[in-house]
Image (cartoon, rainbow, N blue to C red):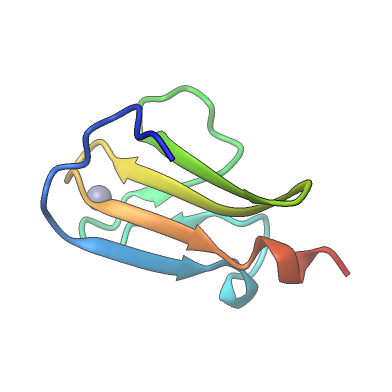
Length: 81
Ligand SMILES: [Zn+2]
């Protein structure tokens, strides 16, 4: 798979969506800024990569724009019950 954006070395955090309450927003594990999936302004975070399993979104790779941490969002599959 091609990477459109070069991922610099640094901290990589994994967030399990099944462990998040509410609308899916969560604080950045490093700097604490609130990252909301509904925020499409591109000011807080940037989507680096999406991983799809079949037709279902399996994983989303984000980068926090404040602290540059890489955050892997997993648990999408379990949400589709
Ligand atoms: Zn951050």
